[in-house]
Length: 57
Image 1: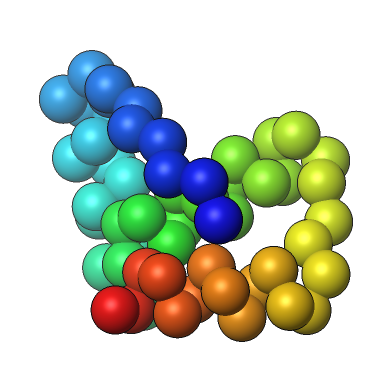
Image 2: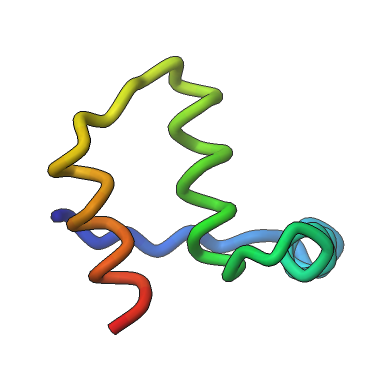
């Protein structure tokens, strides 16, 4: 698993937090999902498990 920091304008950061709360995701979890979709990437089940363990730990 690789770690990355993304600097967002306040408006986007606030919107990410708002959407995460609405959908029951953590902001980091939703951000990773949005990035994955925008890059048109699929993660195999092992990668998904590792991602969720990292975000929840």
